[in-house]
Structure formats: structure tokens, C-alpha cells
Length: 228
Image (cartoon, rainbow, N blue to C red; front, side, top):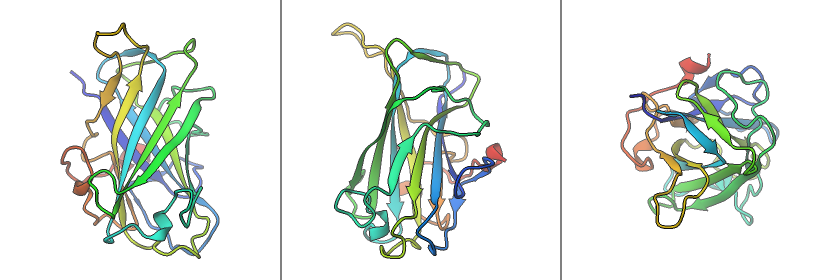
């Protein structure tokens, strides 16, 4: 039986041709532009009545603590430089299940999670559709789940852009209509990575120890061949 899996692909600059890779090298020499992560999934069996998704993406930095460049909170050096949406533009490698506008975006960015280290942070991202417009996911296609955008704003004034980091898509929770109280939830939680660590992407270099943040241990690998 097919297994539900997660994928995470980092796209260079603005997404124009959909040429993705698993390692992004940035010279940190501009305050304009952006870097895009595309989160995707497949499901092992068809899932109907899909009302939304909730994604967890963790960051592990090579330094002992997250530098200012990775500070996206309200009082941090690069506040507002991190966002999420479901705008996949002309990308056509996967299927866009949303098609119309969704509600949601970046719900939270917490430094120190998931393992309590100062070198880690966790993104929580969520999107939903109206309850009268549920989606259906089949067991054949790979689907886009979310697009994460990291802007280059304030790069020159916030230190730490050049340091290495690993980003890990750890889970996608698929929300479905609630069931009567006392019965099992109808939501579907996906935590299995795609083959060869397809839920990993690296910033500046692939040498960061991604093993520090995933839910389960995984072997390093790339998903770039799927997107070229």
C-alpha cells in the first residue's frame, strides 16, 4: 500500500521556471529578492472532505544560537521577513488542491523549538477553505501544500545570513470535518518523509546536522530530480 509522505523543496529567488533544489547558496549581498520553500505531500489512500492543512517546519542552525538574520518575530531584526501562502504561480510539477483563495498563513515562529536549543526554531503554518468547499486528495498525485517565502530585507543590517542551516518539514495535519464527541478524529496526520530525506532543505550548505530536529531519524537526500 502506498505511504503518505512529505516533501520540501527550496527554489532559487523568485519562482519562475520551477527549477528547485535542496540546497540554497546565497551571497547575502542584497536586501531585495526572496527565497521560496515549497511544501508538498502525497497520500497513501484518497482523502475526502479536506478543509485545511497545518504544517510544521523546523530550523536547525549551525551556530550555537540563531543569528539575527533568522529572527522573524515582532521585535526581531528581520520582523516580517517570513511569510507563507498558497500562491504557486505557474508551477505545475505537483497538483494545486487549493485553486482559489485560502485563509491563513504563518501562524507562529518560535525560537527554541522543537528540542529547546537556542539554535532551533519552529514555523507553524495553516490554511483553510470554506466548509462548503472541501477538497479531495487522491492517492495518485503529489500535491502542493504551502509556499514559504523568506525575504532578503535587512540582510545588510542583520548578522548571520551566511551561516548554514537545515530546514525540515516535520508534519502536515490534514483537517477534515469534526466527528461526534467521543469518536476518533477524522483528521489525518502525515509525518513520513519522502524517499531519501525529501523533506529536508539546506541553507548555504548541506553539511548541517538535520538529525537534531526531525520527528524521526532520516537519511540525507535530495528531491531536486523531481523538480527538474
